[in-house]
Image (cartoon, rainbow, N blue to C red; front, side, top):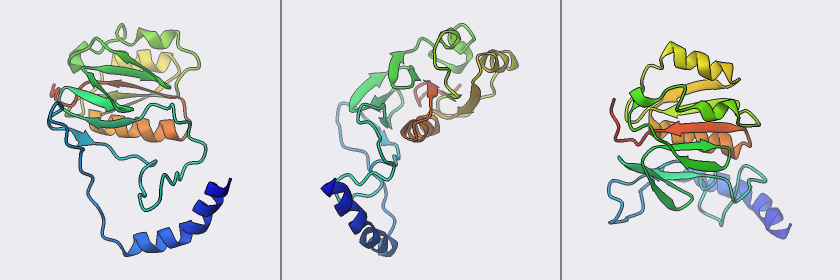
Length: 180
């Protein structure tokens, strides 16, 4: 409670200080084993003048957070994953599709049995946004979910934000290096 009170009293000074600072650029951590690593923005660590000021209250520490990506995979909660990923709530699974044309109703059939039903499925199409087949759109709608298809970088970022808000969200992500 004392930490929260200190954070609340320090917030006006933090805001004044941030208004006077130049915008900063996110730099990926250097890791020679994971080349071309890119960082993803997160609301959790947007302010770094004080230890862990969380602007979204009561965010559990065990939530999945995409922290970075490269052409072949993602970094989630400090663990590097190669290949495509399927995330539902706070569960992460390896996913079979290697390119966008392999994403079918069959590859997403898990969503016919998942409860509670995620309100939105975010498909990360790789490097570029792809057109989702109308049949696949109908299948996703039949499960009760909405669909958002964007590049994998923005899909991971959107997943982070919606998950931090406490919304029930799912993501099906191809590695960023996939171009078609």
